[in-house]
Length: 235
Image 1 (cartoon, rainbow, N blue to C red):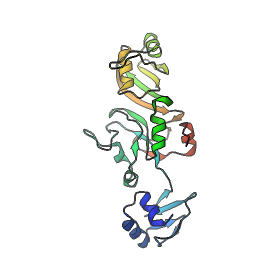
Image 2: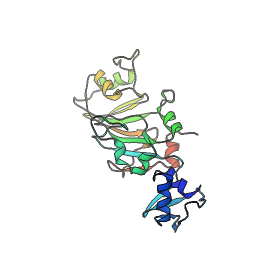
Image 3: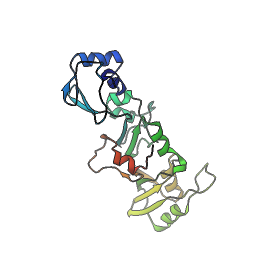
């Protein structure tokens, strides 16, 4: 792929702007300075550098983000900053978007991509991808609430009860809940239907992909091939 086109694909501006970056000797390819915008660059295992920052070549930009509270999962937020503002502008220029949504006050694992196929597979109701949440509740938890959640609770505007794929008490007011649907405010509504109330909500995992312990709120990283496998992604 021509170097100027490669930079444009990765969100570094127009073709003309990328050409200027290259000719001004601000771009290196695998550690070697390259000032030819039309150089044909092999993309296998490619790492290019712009202004000293390394970027891996990525056909699609697929990421995980530790979402902090106070951000909306929207490209056009209404009341709070967009979670996409936590990403470098080059990734935003690729028009990445969250896979599903977490409420403004919900924290934890959020997946973001410009890969339509990945987005569709993880969002499809037919695939029933499990999502694991830790919910801090207002009232003490008991086995009766767990039994209700596992048996199924009826939510407003839903024709049939919805059952949790997993539910366990991990503290007096701490519930680990696994759901496979993507209903609006689902966890909060399910807990309310079982007679309690969610005070704080954190997503621990999607599929078999668990939020890494060393990823801090507001930080992001690329999804690796192993991560995609844990998500059950197949092309």
